[in-house]
Length: 518
Image (cartoon, rainbow, N blue to C red; front, top):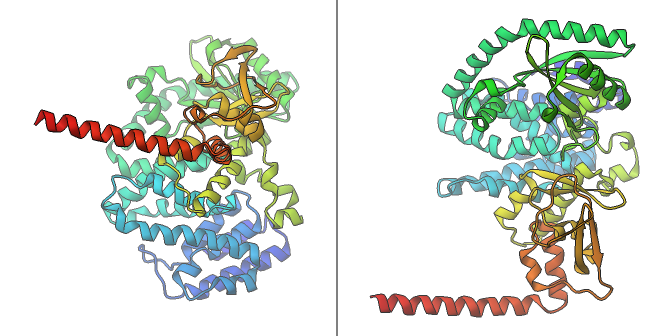
């Protein structure tokens, strides 16, 4: 990547003052990295320029792009954070510091890696602990993406480690941020290094299948375009080919049978507004026979990462099975770039609240996990031990949406229980919970919630959290609030002491049994 390419793209996005800042940052980083080389032999500055280019493509704010250019200066050159703050401002220095802390902590973990079966959970904690600002994660994703794109220059062992880490941690993080295109790029690049033979086999298989169906799909596309034009709609139709890694995962679910995969290639219809999306759905179902079980309305109920679209699969008169995705341009941009595309701060970049990073409290439901992540970050920084399993459930498991009776949306991990919902609404509601109704029916405390459930909490005025509830919560947030209440009521210490006595008795009993057996 060269300076002129970055500036050419930046001119399409930023104003003159911001461009001047970017040129200053590039000049500064170029001077600091002078004489340093990448493993490819290219000047080191090509890497931070590539990171910045990605961030511009993702429509990030200019501070994130400046931090992308400068992200390795503090770690790898004589540059200091104080110097960066004086030249580029506090926000940029804050972001550079966040990315630097991830790199430095990762370096400290390397000595342990030969003794640990995997470092996924440690890295997950690390990412959370340093990410007071979600932009740090997005910059790190750009950094990781370019490192994967140049991974061929690394030793085989390093290739495998970086690829595994990317697949287990960075791809799920991109998905959680709604950054679909980045997730696919990371997954396919990593999979190529982890299972090169399988990657090549699936690539060839996909090419053969697409070769047979592309012409037929072209006919369907022309017919659809003709009908939509006739109906007076403004639209754009394009195609989407399934990624290699997505195909790999899908084949595992259908015992390797390619004939059971209907979305190798899908047609996307992009229209102006939500109403037009549903009009297109009706038109398609009038033209072709819909497969009812495969109609999914992610506009009415978005995916937990904010993805919106209508999916429908139809059978054409010549018995070809075709999947359609119907969405607005805004939905399409979000599906491609997620939080980076419709950045929550985007409309208020110049506001004081933005500068102070206070807008996180206003995040929509699909991004509530970021606020929860920052709560976990605070507790990690304060020295509290968060279990690896708990961390995985909260951040890397599947997510669901549930609703209050008033229609408020709450984002929870799959498998969450009613008390998780109650504590997410408010800690006082959780502490005073007496019973639950889900979709109008009485619901047990230990019965998991499901996507789309409407949950009503009945509370007692003088209710008190119970020690046994520790087995009836799954999220870090709920467990933290519950333990806080139990500690306040003087119950937690008593529980801990009782548990220790029980454990001691169990150990004593085991030793006695062992001595008898001998």
